[in-house]
Image (cartoon, rainbow, N blue to C red):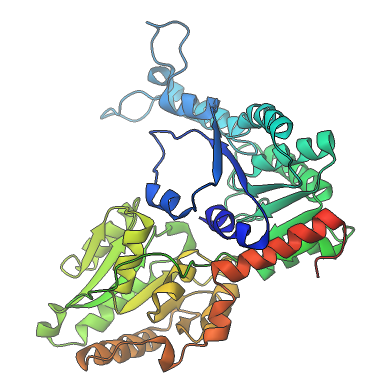
Amino acid sequence: MRAGRFSKYLPEFGWEPLILTIKERPDVYQDYSLLHELPDGIRIIRTSIFDPFLLWERGGVTARRNANNIHSLIRPKAASHSPTFFYRYAKILDNLIRQILSTPDHQLSWVPLAVLRSIRLFRNYRIDLVLTTSPPHSAHFIGLILKRIYRVPWIADFRDPWTERLDLKDVILPFTNNIERLCERCIISGADRVILNTHRNRESVLLRYASQNPDKFVTIHNGFDEKTNISTASTYNKFTIAYTGTFYPKSGQYFFFHAFARWLKTLEHASRSNIQMLVVGDDNKAAQELVDTLELGDVVVFLPRVEHRKALEIAYASHLLLVCLGFDQKNAGWVPIKIYDYLLCKRPILGLLPDGEAAGIIRDTQSGYVITDENYAEASRILNSEHEKWLRGIRSMPEQGWVSDSRRTYSAEFLTSKLAHVMESALRGTSCR
């Protein structure tokens, strides 16, 4: 969405985007509604991709057409007895192969195909600047190669951290971490400008690459598009708390379910039937199991993944919007993109977050509440407050405490103006400050 929004508004600042990406794949979720938001005339060029990792995942590598599936050897069907010695070590081998094929990520094999197609584009168009965006972080090698071939300015945009990401230490082969750090160093050193999506991510990169000119590192947050066409005609009849996305068990995001269960017990039984929580997204099996354990199945509804526009409509029709990162300070620099979507919807946000950047956005925009530890009393107070507003027919709107100037700094048009300034500075070789 970030790249799409930049492409949508860059023409307003004198830049004509030419987008290179992969062909659509049936195994990857496609939200075609996002394409409809792009203006007419934006050129999108798609190439094929060869992905050995996915071939391995699907068990599609065979010695000959009628050969047995490789995964039938290392992934036998579950049996009633304990796994055999062979099976345990076959699983280790499988994990090793998957790790090797996904270092630095499993889209690395797209780089040569993308470079070849880019060479054709350079022949057919006047290209003044290259911008690569990640993840997948291997996409930046395309920009590095094109910069060296054509001597054009190149900007590397990081939508998420690379070697600082949370799963980097969860590896079987530690040397792959060193490979990724080396790759990151090549990209950071080679790029004319490096864009990070939070201030803390920028600070982290500056600490690790102190020899680089700090002016080349710029923060441009993710944001929201105020021109997104969503239906705002209706709201839910029940007091509705909405969460869009996936709960990640390792991040300690389940505090809210426990707090929610405690709060419900303080209400009269009749009130419970007028309260619901909507969880919109895939891969929430662990959360569903916890909901069953806490006997919340009558008030918590799990919905499948929907188009972005539909998710916004669900959020807009709700009364309180939930964002959870857990309270570990290692997540302090992480800002879930749903926060920006919630800002667009102008509904109060309840953030269960470490004291960091995401919490700061909610506070600066005065768009809701922040809890930075397992404070059940504070959670109940907030739920009571918003529930009482709903009972009285009050809805939190921007004129009731929102800071419009702070909120505007996260609008797509404003953020694209910052990007255009960075692009102009890279083109002219001047400071982007």
